[in-house]
Length: 286
Ligand SMILES: Nc1ncnc2c1ncn2[C@@H]1O[C@H](COP(=O)(O)OP(=O)(O)O)[C@@H](O)[C@H]1O
Ligand SMILES: [Mg+2]
Image (tube, rainbow, N blue to C red; front, side, top):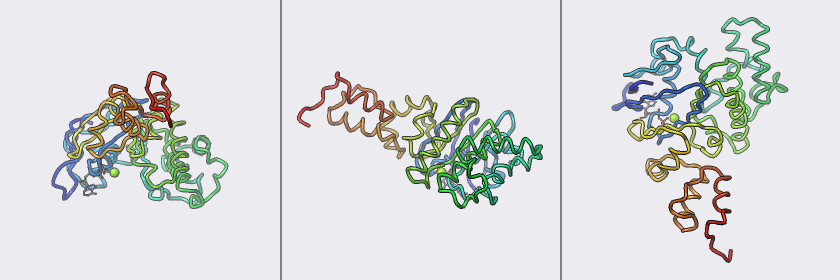
């Protein structure tokens, strides 16, 4: 993204606003920012849905593997950029899991053998191969979201964009989706762009965080741990959620249980390590 500003039809100001970001294969980029800062708009610009399907004024540019997403048709870009939205039902179109995963590959006129082998591999990857004959309706919300991820895997797209993929899910569904994603990240050669409020699960594999502020400007961009640890107070003020362990770490600091200069923990493991550290003076009698 180069100096990217997007103003929706009828909107008074752009969000995102003047954002420049380069993402390389292997990166898992968490996109954070308050509601309305432009995260979803930015996500939709990555495969051309903005401005090609959702009317908006775009200045600056988005290029994926050298192709402009404003000028290349969405159908052509779909080979490079796979999307997973908040509501899996908005993108499931067929009557069985196998048909669903095969659908995009069939539309690319790939040979039958390849369609089947890629579909099988993708469904196995997310643990749904045994249910390949099921109607997607029978899956839980987490299961349907895993199906959407399997569709992205089957496309072998080098870029996968997920916009709040766990927002509608219960705790088990969130775990299921993140297990599938962790597995996908482990292959290491894709770029993953993840918009997510629930940071506890995402923290396990995000490598980088970019933060949009209320005006849609790029406020922070860096390694995820550094961005969250160094800007925790400002992020909270901006309305950005933090991992539960980070919030707990702040409270322990405020109460003098952790020293003021202790780094904030990002995961339950880091928090446990700090609290259990014999260097830390814990109050007695509890
Ligand atoms: N389809 C649309 N038409 C007009 N305005 C929109 C549309 N989608 C989003 N917006 C506006 O664009 C801004 C950014 O929205 P969005 O990208 O959805 O933010 P986020 O995902 O960070 O909550 C908001 O001011 C929102 O009201
Ligand atoms: Mg959004």
